[in-house]
Length: 114
Image 1 (cartoon, rainbow, N blue to C red):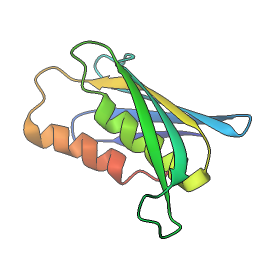
Image 2: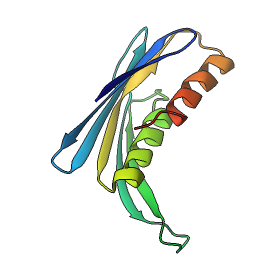
Image 3: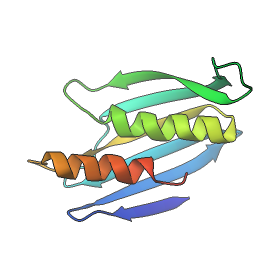
C-alpha cells in the first residue's frame, strides 16, 4: 500500500508492506525526506484489563530529529489494529515550519487509516 497525504504546504507519502505476518511502514515527505527515527511496536493486552489491545514501542532516533511522534503514532496504531509487530521509519522535514504546520502534519497522521 502506498498513500499520499496532501497538506496545505507539502505532501507526506506513507508506504506499508507485509513482511510475513509483520508490517513495515515508511514515512517520507517535505523538502528533505530522510530517516530520522525507527519505531518498533509490538501488540499486547491492554493494562486496563478490559480485553482491548495496546502496543509497546521501542524507539531509535537520529540526534535532533523529531520524527518519532508521527512514526510512533503509525506503528502503534497498526500494531493494535492488526495484532502484528510493526516497524515504522522515515522522516518529514520542511525548513522553518510553524506550530500550525506541525499540528497539520500530526493531525494528518493521526487521522490516517492504516
